[in-house]
Image (tube, rainbow, N blue to C red; front, side):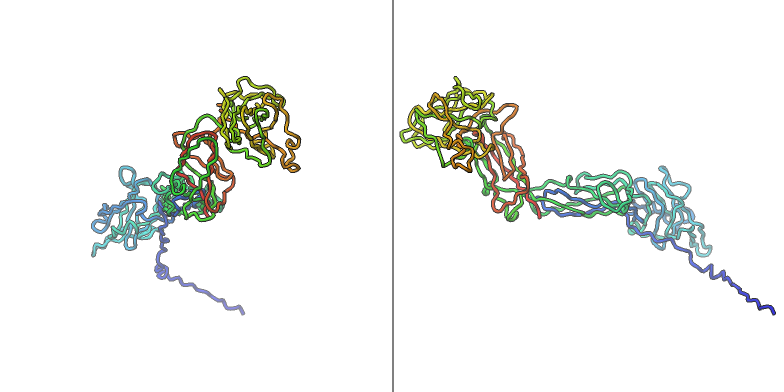
Amino acid sequence: MAAPTTGVRLRIDHRAERSIPPRQPPQLVADGSTTATLRLSLPGNARVDRLDVVLTAQRAAAVAARAVAQLRVSEATAAVLAGQGKAVVVDFGTPRTVSELELPEGLTVWRVLSWTGAAFAPTPAYQAQTIASDASTGAIQVTPRAPSSANHVFLDAEVRTERLQIELLGEPDEAALPDQLELKLPEAPADLELAIDAAAPAWRHPGPVIAGTGTGLDEDGWNADGRRLVALAPFLPPPDPTAPEPRELLLTLKSRVPGVLALAEHARTFARVWRTSFGGRAELAQEFAGEGLVEVALELPPETGDPVRIEALQLTVSGEFGTTRTLPPLGPEPTPLAELALDPQHAAIVRLGVAAPLAKLAGLRLPLRIGADGAEARVALWSGQGGEPAAPLPEGASAPVQLAGGLDTWVDFTFARPLALEGEPLWAALLPSRGELAWSLAQSADADDPAAGNALRRGPPAGPWRPLPAFFASADASANLAAGLRGRVRALGTAPAEVPLAPLTLGLADAAAELTPEAKEARIALRPIAPLMVSGTPVLQLIARSPGRVTLREVDVVVSAE
């Protein structure tokens, strides 16, 4: 017997199918803008070495009309909307590409027209499927064209235009409409500019933002997330050493095309520049009667703390010095172990190793102590040959100098006219003609010592000149405390024109600057090899090689920030 056949019947209810509501397009979310800002706070005296910010520039989902356009609302121009519709003109002021728009609920779009440059196009960029009027009530009914809904419209194609005209059914709130009307502008952000406060843009990116492939951040381009670094330190205002209080900076990022824009600080490093004083005085005027050292204490504001880590010293300098230079300007330092006792029968001669940088020799300075009855002495120059004195120079004698008893200082011996320094180093004989005097000596430990080249010889005023006894001539200071005796002497003269020698040295620790101050002010900087940790008061050294004057002001100390 055959098995019974099982039948399955399907019933399709077309009424149920018709009752399914039409699918609504997703709601636009306005996240686009043409501007992003970031406020930063920095000390007013900050010297910013690094200030990097992260820029974000991504395509926007949508943008509120207020951010990109001006709106004008008037009565509808289409006859089918007469009395019940409005026309909204969206004026961008510049060509923009639009693909979608969304109005508040309760409004229904009949059609959208684009501007051609002279008038609105006769062919709509979008038009609803149908429009009808109820014969009994006169109410107008508009049926959207899929996939659009009544208030969310997809244009038939992307439109690039300066204006849109939206003809709609309903009564929009004109005050709220610029915020309620949302537009989809599918272009990427383009032609970006980043400005600090009201200054000209510090950074520009022409053209559209093209996302890269990586996720890292650098200054070379955009990453996959539409982000990049921008270094702003070179564009920040200079520090004001007199205004350490915080200052506010406003960074503004602008894009010609709206997008998701953002600014965020990434990294900063800075030092602080503090105005110092000279014991409460803003300016120091220092006179130099001759060569020598002056040490100046720099008084820092208490806000700098103690200790401080000094990176540099900046100051404004002016002054005036003569052309004569004294070498060395300091030292050689005396040794307490020995001195040369001289009289008219006993003289001494010294090799002028200190005169090497000079082109012409105008005189010498020697440190002398005079007997109670006073003395008279002069200096005579000798040529050198093979490292020894050879012969006196006819025009190389100074005038006799009268020396008062008890004098223990540097004495000047000047020549009638400067002598050219060429060939081997010259020798200078100290020749007493009356009384007794003592010439203090230096002890040289190595070749870098200022007195290293000042070898001594002794003998009668006319020579011959003999070396010091072997006990004093030994170069081994470790074996003989009296070894390495040298003459203490300073040379006066002028430097070669092609290799000028500055009259003044400014020093802070191991940082030094050679200066030739002039009446016109100059700004200089001293930078130690490594930042200088100072507890207490920093000391500035001024070393002069000539008589003159110098004025220092606007002295600023650059201190590392923690």
